[in-house]
Image 1: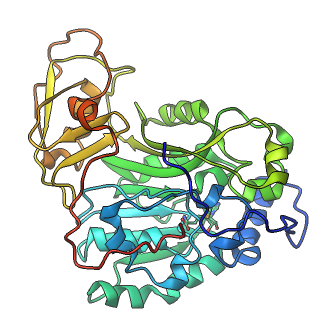
Image 2: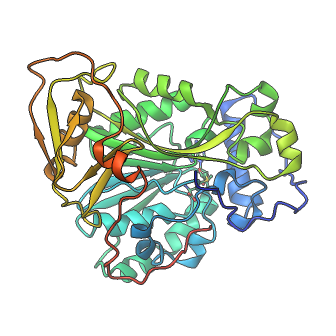
Image 3: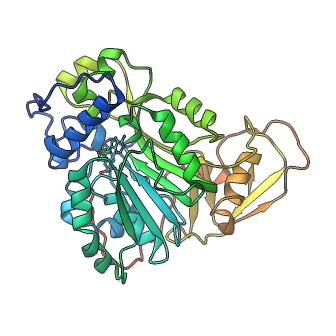
Length: 386
Ligand SMILES: C[S@@+](CC[C@H](N)C(=O)[O-])C[C@H]1O[C@@H](n2cnc3c(N)ncnc32)[C@H](O)[C@@H]1O
């Protein structure tokens, strides 16, 4: 597995950081106030973080580098995400970024949806939003758009009432769900705003167990994206209960906390930075079922001419037929990926359980080795915090 990098924060720095008031962390409001104070007033740049949990994104994928290089330094230097939750096939899409911070992912996605698309960023912390808004016009000009295709909203990710039901193609989030005291409401709101066939594509910190109360109630551990990390199986259960059948893991990277004091507090709990895809699709099966279906990637998704990686075991090589289960067939046919796949067969005849495993392209090449096109306008650079 790829080693997590440390985003410039110095693990030898004294970790004695203080919030202005000691929050009780007992009510949802006090949790949010404490988190907002942390991101609005305590931190002023990525390197102020005390652990690498909120910054454990590793090196950016090659295809994203030109887009990252177009992000203003004031934004990039305040990036606190733990991954690259930027899905494929975004041209013309309407997207929402939950907990957008200063807007790094919003401004990357703005380039990918293009002038016909629209990206909403939602965050509760005014100081973060101010940086995003101050650079909005600069970004629009840099992208060559007559007007900005970005909108920043001050608000809670547990209440997206400003966004119409069934109006959004893609919701993304980068290291924010863990910070919510009401993750059930976040999932319900994402499900509500997505169109049928829409996708929730997000990176977050997860834990290999339910964490003890003293960790969850520690304001610094919470704000550093560790205390609120969900037990990974609880996340799957919550996603399914909300209506997102068959959640798919795209990537998982171990988080090395790299802070002795904090490691001593969390003990043997293990944390990962995971990127997941959840689809709003009706009628998915409880498990992989075989209907004799085949999917062929057409190689038409921009920047992905050779292959498409649905998840950590489903790589589709352009032109190569792959046997797929009913759920995978639906994800590739009844979503915005549909125009890029030929899916042969339907669910009228059932052949029993599908022997779910790696596609032939994954077996041959591994799940992370899909070469992407790099011939896009801007020069390559590594503007991410890592
Ligand atoms: C770890 S930072 C990530 C910021 C951004 N996604 C990035 O990658 O730089 C978490 C952000 O989520 C926001 N946030 C946390 N909980 C929130 C909530 N319940 N509602 C709205 N915003 C929230 C914080 O204000 C902060 O800007």
